[in-house]
Image (cartoon, rainbow, N blue to C red; front, top):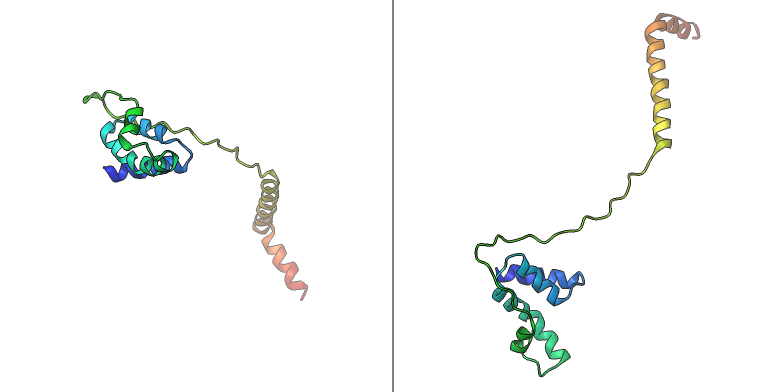
Length: 127
């Protein structure tokens, strides 16, 4: 479970979210607040020692707001925003060319069926 949370926080940070937003997202999704904060220490320990060496993980966890967990509450999935869909490209030129070729092909098939004997006689007389 912890590995899953760590991977999710890492993913959120790589996408540009803040550590607090990632933590709150996991807690709102129904994960245990204690487990999420323990997993977040992996990221906050390195950052806090660079920013202010005097801050400890306990002071960081004190700064985070505590949210009560209801045990009967069903976990909510994070909401994904739909990607902007592009309108399909209109290939009217290609469609027109294909329709013209289809008409020519149908015409050739009909003419062979109707005048097949005359066409073969004409072609044999040429030789």
